[in-house]
Image 1 (cartoon, one colour):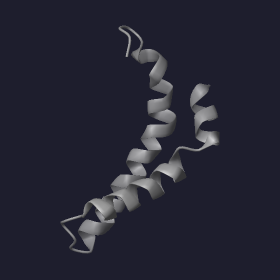
Image 2: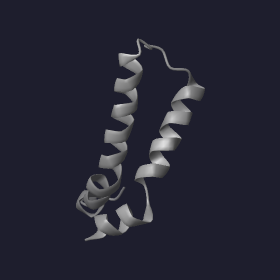
Image 3: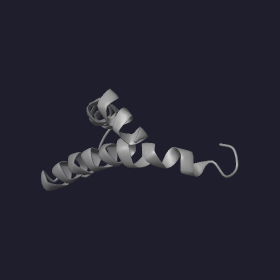
Length: 66
């Protein structure tokens, strides 16, 4: 990342990666409430991909650009 360019990426942080973080946090809390404290790589990838495709959408990307 070039120096002094983080402000260009901030809208993506708020509009796309923020919802991804919230969705994945909910998944982790659900696992913890079910007394699951070890997640395999496969289970992580499944949960992350599900949340990724739900939160990184065209609508969120355009909304982040505003």
